[in-house]
Image (cartoon, rainbow, N blue to C red; front, side, top):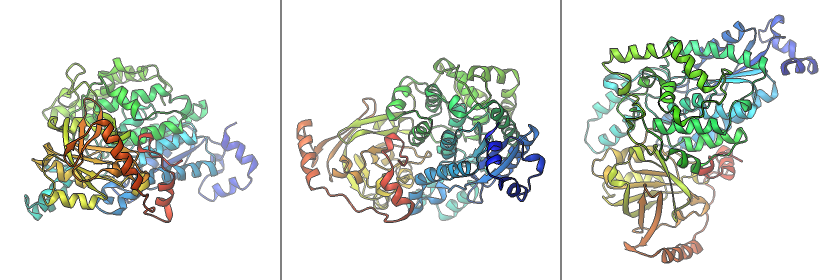
Amino acid sequence: MMKSQEIRKIAPEMDPLRLGSGWKPEDLGKPQILIESSFGDSHPGSVHLLELSQEAKKGAAAEGGYGARYFCTDICDGESQGHDGINYSLASRDMMTNMMEIHAGATPFDGGVFIASCDKSMPAHLMAMGRINIPSVAVPGGVMDAGPDLLTLEQIGAYSAMCQRGEISPEKLEYYKQNACPSCGACSFMGTASTMQIMAEALGLALPGSALLPATSGKLREYAFEAGRQAVRLAKANLTPDKIVTMESFENAIMVHAAISGSTNSLLHLPAIAREFGLSIDGETFDRLHRGAHYLLDIRPAGRWPAQYFYYAGGVPRIMEEIRSMLHLDVRTVTGKTLGENLEDLKKNGYYQEGEAYLKKLGLCREDVIRPFDRPFGTDGSIAILKGNLAPEGAVVKHTVVPRSMFQATLRARPFDCEEDAIHAVLTHEIRPGDAVIIRYEGPAGSGMPEMFYTTEAIASDEELGASIALLTDGRFSGASKGPAVGHISPEAAQGGPIALVEEDDLIRLDIPGRRLELVGVKNQEKSPDEMREILRERKKSWKPRPLRYDKGVLKLFAERAVSPMKGGYME
């Protein structure tokens, strides 16, 4: 007997309450499917999800089930930028997961469909799938179209900085702002939203070929319908997510992450998702798997094209075909089949032909977007984990967007205790070539771990600074960020990590190939490792913890309970 039917026997109020919600008597005994989505008028990535929820409900009905739509709307990182709203971003992931747990726990269901598009909603839904552990399918909500001349939203930060420096007119900036988001869907670059949609499929939790479709396409609605049907089938078979997702599934996802030059925020999200499945991965796992991995994707911000071209070139299945020698092809997926079987099925059913037709109209071929395995952009993945006396627990850099001139450098420290002061210094040319801009007290305990997006864009859009300075922070970056940026420095400043002890004109050595981030001098004079150890020990004696920035509400809870960014930044 399915769980929903067991509960009906225990709770006699269940039937009349559902009948009052529009259920018919014949629906009560069907497999009951929880349809979760982040639908809301909050931003382009969620405004269209009601339609997908309705399609999933129809699909469940077509397979003999009954779908109930639940909603937990997400916030938009883009709309939260530049003010304290971004402090809520990472915390919102955990709160959404908690709310979905409440939905499923208060009224048990037999299966689920989890529909989301964006930075925190997609990982929250994947975390919820692991925590709730009912037979479920994830539906990635797709990507928006690019604007005129392939304009995409991640360019707006750079254009804004250029306007502030007087390099473009306010009218030109206004034009860009009015044309950067021409449709619904996740932003059209390989940011966190696009990356996490791809991770849903790479983990085997979404139907093959469903990640990062154009959000306006009928194909996406077809996938949502099929997800509703598949959720009923999985419920009847009792194939729960914990029977699908293994450590090998996460290793596959990380190999795909390397091939697409995915967002560094995945180092927060994949460990948090793994934890819900009773598994443990961290920054070291990423670093190990990225070493020797082939980076193949020519999508912004590291590449040339908007993210909608990803599907045209074959999407996740094509990436997996290219790197299949590095994947575990025998892992199970939500189809009930193995990954290898899914890839063979897609080749037989003509999956690749529609996308190739789009590329042909654009005058492109598949290899213009997804390179073959033997012609990669690089063979060292796309991220590196750095350690040293400045980051004993680690830090992350997306080296595919770092100028080669900054792979190994010794820099002068310019510490700032908040992003606002740092970006002012960059825009007013107080920062000079050879500086290391340090933004601290921006980790989970410091301020909720906001993105340092505007500062990275201000640096990357400055031709001189973008090739001659680094940005180091215990905060994080947008998946759209590019340039010499090192984030997630742990332990964070608010917990007394070495980043809190850095002083003006300290010397910092950045060594990406060597995976090192070290304080190596004071007042522009190099010191020995033993001398630096003693200097930091003396500085730590006079350091005092700061009062929590928030004394109530969600951000107080998050500051008190979030683990290190290198472990996933989730709340314990």
